[in-house]
Image (cartoon, rainbow, N blue to C red):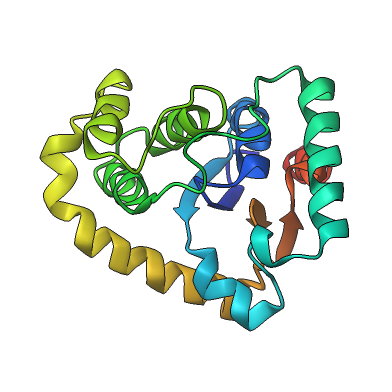
Length: 197
């Protein structure tokens, strides 16, 4: 099924993107699908689609979110800090570097995974320039060389965010879009798997 392309919309600050990332990348690699990684800005998407940032959600929804994160952490046996020291991170530089890596034909998905792991498992601050560049270096990517492209890449992110919302019906992270089908949430990966096979 090498002809299938998945548009992968995510946020580096999203624990759900983090929880699904490695499974998603493994299943698409196995199927031969092409992944177009698209980090987007949900602060642009939420106001137009009825979403709210976590602190603005009701206490009931916040409590349930924590229950679900605990369940999935245990079920997947993935390290996840429930209250990371540097969340939400200022992810502009990291996001810009992921997009710059994508545009340069580098392994942007692996870099995105490293940034999410830094936030959710390693207590590292991807809002810190030195840390952000160090994570890129650890993934074999020269972040310093790509840094000059970050502003133009963030403009691409904003355009992708608006297109994701208006053309693809994306409203949350992660979202996996195959053709006209949208699969929202890492708990929909079984359906993504079926679509790939």
